[in-house]
Length: 220
Image (cartoon, rainbow, N blue to C red; front, side):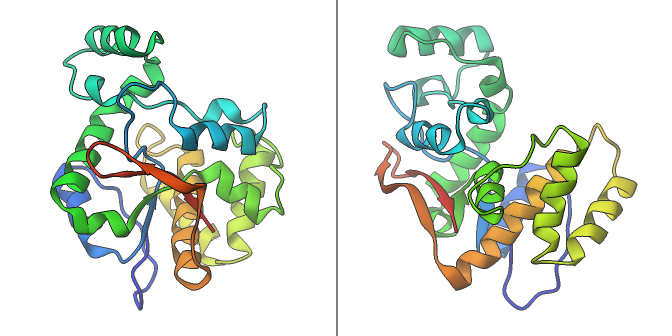
């Protein structure tokens, strides 16, 4: 996230209200969270294109969010049934685990349409790939991969190393993993760059879902 003219800072958002306050406060937000949901198709076009862009080794980092009919299901079993009945494909556990967060973000963006122009879905691995000249070095769950990603951000924002160290010291691992920190850093960097350099999307002409939300992966 970034706000023009402010000193860089970090914080953990622990409630829906804190998230909403942040969405309203910042001028541009790149977020690694699905925005816009299909009605009947299991895969969004933007996710399919992103997997192709990242390549076979890194494609598993992209997962399909629930279709809209399954978004408000009270349990994984029911969401899975709805997904299978409509798409003939099951909802992954990984997708279900973040469905409550997707639900909250979806509500804010549909109830407050002004947020849609500044809260943009992105993907850290695509951003790192672009910072590294179109290649991904190593997976971020390795020490070399993590360090390389941090160095890529640090090359543009030297404060990134201080933030990484301070966040590790301030928060427990069960609150924030190391790869979550570097992902947040590159998303914030891309949000900043997007003000100066403009924004590209996958696909170039995104579809709009039934609630008016654009289904696209944004990058610089």
